[in-house]
Length: 76
Image (cartoon, rainbow, N blue to C red):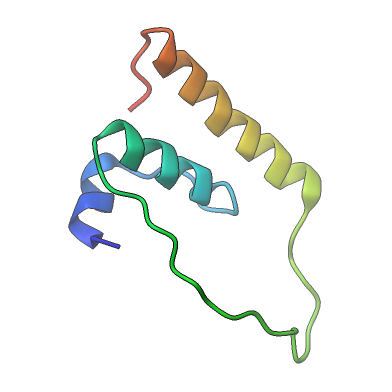
């Protein structure tokens, strides 16, 4: 990722919804999106802080802003 580019497009999300927001904004600003393979592992200890409802609401908000942009209302 180009950190300067991400700072310039103004990321607002702070949860799991940051991923679609970055994808939408990079694509709309003419940037390149590429797949980078990685590995996953199990959580060694602790309890996940993921809350489905909270993340679903923030993801929906990102999608709403993307739709508003598509119909001509700037959202960033």
